[in-house]
Length: 411
Image (cartoon, rainbow, N blue to C red; front, side, top):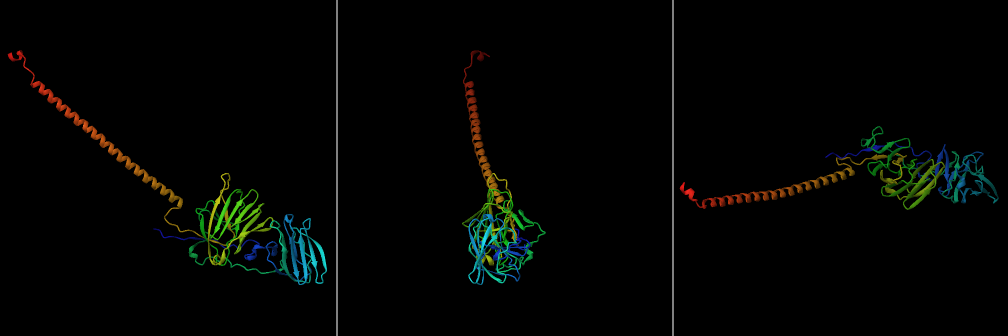
């Protein structure tokens, strides 16, 4: 018997998603060109920030599709006894800023919300420490951000431990080696094709102190296809490709996205699942998963995948791409064939056994029939011989007992 061999495919660490922090603030924070964007729907309450010294106030409101913000939302930037309250919508893609000073005096100003980063809020130039509070959160379809220039200092968030390759390098196949069937390496990360993988369950290395790695959504026309992903029996995620968008189900929570963004990633914290999108820039909360401290302290996780597809679809590939560092552990290789082959062999063995039994039965029946026929033939021969002997005896007796004629006597 061959010794069981465990092979792990090592994938080099990917330095997270571009612009998405590797910590709990990935749920609401995005970084582009060192500037910070805070998603107002998910930003924590009483979020602290510190403005730099200067004549301007580098804080603005940003959105790439403000027309979808039809429901009211209100947030406040407070510095001491100064309140800067922004409420929207105010018509024509704008908001209204209500400024209240220390003496109780107030003033209003229109704030236009676009995808430009030059529409600054009229904050005080002398105040530096601000607290952000969102009293009325934007609706899920309202992709509204607070834009902060790179010199604004924001509240630090817990950062996950950096991905470190497994220590026992003798157990790994380096990136120059061949990958198992269905797996590939690309620019976005390490991928495997759910529809062509030889098995449904694999074990992966993620490292201690890290959440489940982020997944890139494939840009494929697979309308009607449903993909199921289950993580260590702790989190179940189903993704269905609809006519124009996606439908996500995390546990009992369902989120329908009516459009397909240019790029999108399913990202994970230790407790929640989000969809991070670009084109337009947005974040959606898909649901919660109770990973718990055990998952956080485990270096590996178990991933089980399956899919459903209608007969009419031509989609034959679904790449699940990890954009964070992972290592794949293959199952043990033995002399036993894969389950499908085993099933076929078993069926063949059963067929052979059935055929052998049938042949044996046929031979037995043939022998019996032959014996019966032989006995009948032998009986007929014996009867014929007995009949002939009897006939010759009768004929002989008749010849001896026949009377002699006178002529015969004279002679």
